[in-house]
Image (cartoon, rainbow, N blue to C red):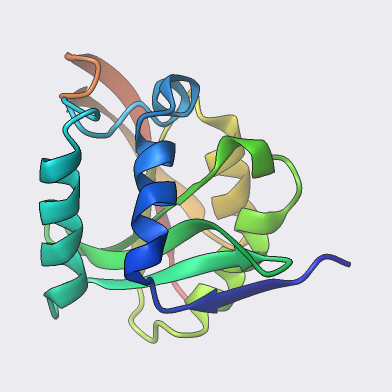
Length: 158
């Protein structure tokens, strides 16, 4: 079985992270993201703030020795939440599901929340495979696509 491990995010990961951010197919799937994903200086500044902040806890996802994405814990709309992103070429292999499972063992706080566009079936599957339960659906504004999006809200109680 391919090996998935988590580690600290490093400066050398930034080019890969930026490449994932500007992937138009992935952005269409994720729906929520940067309004201006091609602004690399803003991207680097944002990640510098994230990595130096006590409000975020992020880990790199490494698959068979290669950096392929990240998973993060932060507060969103007053709730402890997680999110994740994986390079599109690695979708559909169970990598994110395994990475999120490992990440959840590092986060003691419960309940823990996550959100996914209803159209993002892969992300919904990751959450449900890790024990998250859908608790609500709401319409949220996406700056990335400048439109309203139907979003599922998930909670992990234990």
